[in-house]
Amino acid sequence: MKKLTKNNHSFKKSKKGIYKKVAVIGCGYVGLTSGICLANIGHRVICVDNDETKIKSLISGKIPIYEPGLEDLMKKVTSIKTGPRLEFSNSLEYAIKESEIIFVAVGTPSNPDGSADLSYVENVARTIALNIDEYKLVVEKSTVPVQTADWIKTTINRYKKNNIEFDVASNPEFLREGSAVKDFMFPDRIVIGVETERAKKLMLELYEPIKAEKIVVDTKSSELIKHASNSFLAMKISFINAVANVCERTGADIEKVALGMGLDKRIGRSFLNAGIGYGGSCFPKDVKAFIWISQNIGYDFGLLKEVEKVNQTQRKLFIKKIEETLWILKDKKIGVLGLAFKPDTDDIRESPAIDVIKILKEKGAKLKVYDPKAMEKFKVIFPDLEYCKNVYQVVENSDCLIFLTEWDEFKKINFKKVKQIMSQAIILDGRNMFSPEKMKKLGFVYKSIGRE
Ligand code: UDX
Image 1 (tube, rainbow, N blue to C red):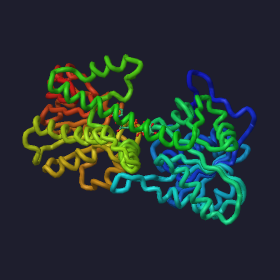
Image 2 (cartoon, helix red, strand yellow; image 1 turned 135 degrees about the vertical axis):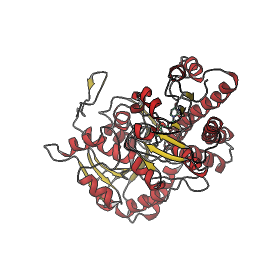
Image 3 (tube, rainbow, N blue to C red; image 1 turned 90 degrees about the vertical axis):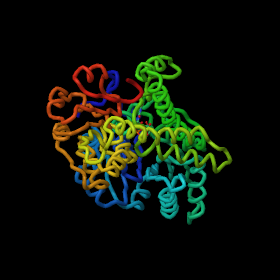
Image 4 (cartoon, helix red, strand yellow; image 1 turned 60 degrees about the vertical axis):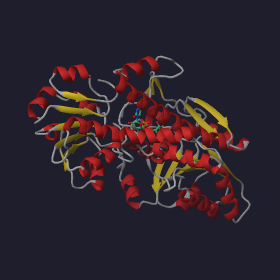
């Protein structure tokens, strides 16, 4: 595997040879990436999950998710001559007893009312309390509402059968799917929320090999940094999507507006890409949870409610654009390119493609779909779509082609060939992947977001 480097400084192992015994509870995107990367920087890690199939797959060397570079890194740390630094288990008790630092990286899905479901977190806290036999540092890795660390501490004290000491820390993760390994190994910052000097020392030693700014704060501030950061990024996306709607009514070009805005260092160009809105397992959930937490402590976070509303409206406006172009959708052959919530992942959670395809199906359109990685997961929700092997199978004889995920593969499409095999040369681009002038010159009716 290509050596992990950034600006040609190859990665430095912990000089002091300090390695920690770490358990990571929950083998999802965050838990698995964190566990493998912590092993990669020299620690001994046990990754735990209650899904036996997932554990068996991991033990066999297979990663059950698509995440560039993660499987290679796992193979590297499990084949170390001095013995594997990474093991997988379905026994929470074993991992707790064998480790000093215990990362809680279990799911915190949304409840119907928008609050975070913390039952998995509470279950881990209780199990730790029943198995604590020496000092433990329990670390929140999952995105959790502010004050959760206090609840974990209360729970462990309540169920503990002895008076062995422990600490609770918060260490939120900022990795993005598709660049998870890079984001973990070369983060903009590492946020450490602790209440004791002992916990602070342990966490700083744990992350010593990672050369990045580390900020040490209290647990509540650390928990809020995560929710506030994700909510701000979601707000940035909804803001540019709202401006795109103004562009559509005034003849301005959203790409040029985003360029001009982004050159202001206080704004920055990233996360100003207008499109059909954000999806994924984090932004939608975290915005909802932040709204709920705020409501719960007596603050009406209206700004975030609007962020959510703009995001949901973007999907509807895209469907409207398809109808304005095609008129009747019933029996129209529509080719759909891109199903994942973003490129370089197989994840379809809250993907805009789910909403768009649901509505197109309801309106009687005949759909052919293709995505480089996400079709297997999409088949679970929509088994009766026509899943194609490649772009051109989708394009053939279609009345319209819509782009929902900006995979690099789609940027290499031969549009001259596309034009010959489509039945109507109509393209709707939900991610502003192509140049309107070029597409029109090729003879397409081409529509995108926030520009002519
Ligand atoms: C996000 C945060 O970026 C990450 O820090 C956090 O740890 C987890 O949640 P992720 O959800 O993996 O990461 O993907 P991200 O790259 O942030 O994109 C989220 C969604 O926003 C995607 O649906 C993407 O298509 C959309 N997006 C992103 C836009 O619509 N416009 C943009 O400019 C950027």
